[in-house]
Length: 113
Figure 1 (cartoon, rainbow, N blue to C red):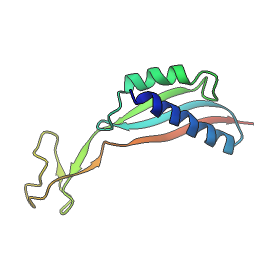
Figure 2: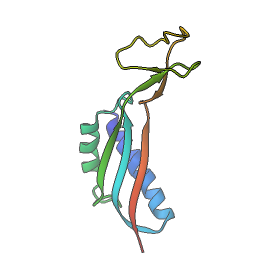
Figure 3: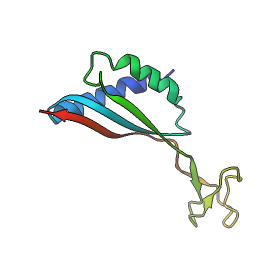
Figure 4: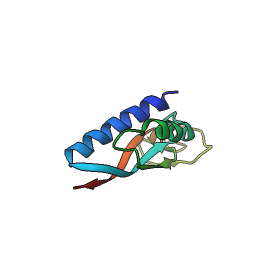
């Protein structure tokens, strides 16, 4: 259940950014999470609902945008479709993960006085 530690770090990061900008509250957070990041988004949302209490994020809604896994050949840049063998049919080079394993704090909407 590392989702709880992810939420703890997320709120800490948001508090740092809010302080740096003189924010009085945070209204919305937008997070992008790759499908291969090993994060259960429902559990992350539940953990956020619990941990945000008594923080600058107490009234902020959390939006989670999924990022699909995308593979490509590192040599010829050919995209590898979902369900294909993870090897380029042209170059015979193993595919490289281009996206889908990231966790990104994409946007913080805050109120500044």
